[in-house]
Image 1 (cartoon, rainbow over the protein chains, first blue to last red):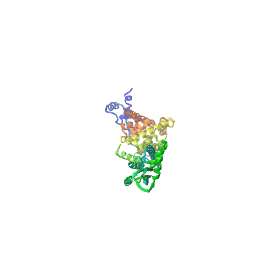
Image 2 (tube, rainbow over the protein chains, first blue to last red):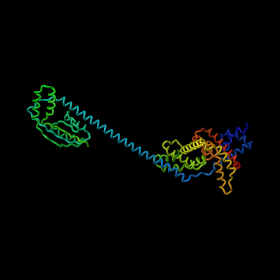
Image 3 (cartoon, rainbow over the protein chains, first blue to last red):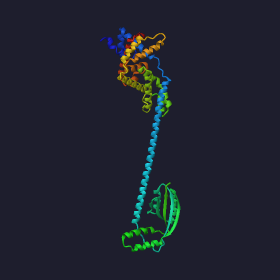
Image 4 (cartoon, rainbow over the protein chains, first blue to last red):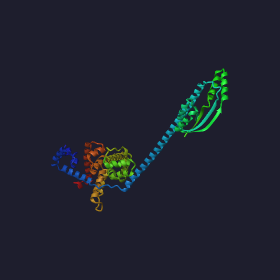
Amino acid sequence: MTDCDNIAEKLPLYALGELDENEKQEIEAHIKSCKNCRNFCAEIKSIVLALKNMDDIEVSEDIHNKIMDEIKKINYNKKKIKFKESLFTAACFIFMCIVTVALYDIQNKKALEEAEISSTVRQSADSVIDYEKKDKAIIYESLTLSVKSNDINAILNTAKYYDPEAYLNGSSINFKILKQDLELLMQELNKISEAEITDRKKEDKTEQYNKITAQINSADKSEDLKELAEQAFFMEMDSECFFIKINIKNL
Amino acid sequence: MSSDDELLIKKALHGDIDAFEDIVYKYEKMIYSVAFRMFNDKQDAEDLTQEVFIKLFKSLKSISKKNNLKSWLYTVAYNASIDEIRRRKGKNQISSDDNAESFINTIRSDKPGPEEEAINKEKTRILENAIACLGEKHKSLIILRDIDGLSYNEISEITNQSLGTIKSGISRARKNLREILEKSGEIKDYS
């Protein structure tokens, strides 16, 4: 292999000054005495210079516009998809809210039903009555309050403060309080809702009470006694108490 | 990335289409030149340029501050053009050897007359045709190094090749280009 063959690979780089110092010196030593390699280097250099000086290629406005038209189309489609995704997300969110409210409502109703059931059970269990009220007048005073609230539990808890036996009956709460506590009750209800008395009445139940009492005294079967006791329980009202029925209206 | 490019990309990410257009204005000539020299065809160059900028638009989020936008664009243009040329070769649509032969014959038989373009423009035409005869790898190296003036490090990053491989490739590309011009009788203009 000649010296020319040895350095042939490096000459195109040497011609443009792209070799390191050691390789450069090796080639310079050769081309001093080799015309072919010298001419080769000159040709390469000239070609590369011509390449550097080639006319610029201009981009027409037409090409630019075609590029931007395509970009704008993609951008528009991207926005459309984003909008559809937002709608879908919003729909999912609304759906989740509806589901959550429905679940809450179902749970709430279940709690109310349980409260009602347990209070009913309690009433049946607690039907031990004092039958020493024969001579006392049994006057029912009942009030109906209309309450606007979304929080049935809060109203029930307020009622239970006055009567632990307060119970839910559909969308109303039934309980007893002393007359002297009515004003306080109204104040507390108005803190958490809008409450007003919509109905007020008195009923004399003395005769009914006495009748049940007599029946209890003469009853000899436990099932009869139980039923009579329940009836008597509801009779155990006097003029010093109100039998309150709160009708709950959701806001 | 230059602060100008960074700002434009940030704006474009926020939906500012005018900012993206500024990026296109800044780099379209660079990409179109590479594309045109790779394919030696206006329509192909236009298609490739559009492809590069569409890719950029879709990739804005993933272009980090670390990226050099110019290198990124070159890399996409380089890879897309190499892939397309190889695809056409696979379909026997082009062959650099055939191109070299036809180029040489054309040059020999179709000499320009005095009424034709000025000598510089003619030289450009001949050079462009000669470059078109190179294989895609050598062609891209000549474009990136000798026409566009990128450094060896930049070319190494764009082509994902080592410096040694790049230098060796450039050397062979220049040698081949010289041979094509020699066979066509044009080398005397470079002596």
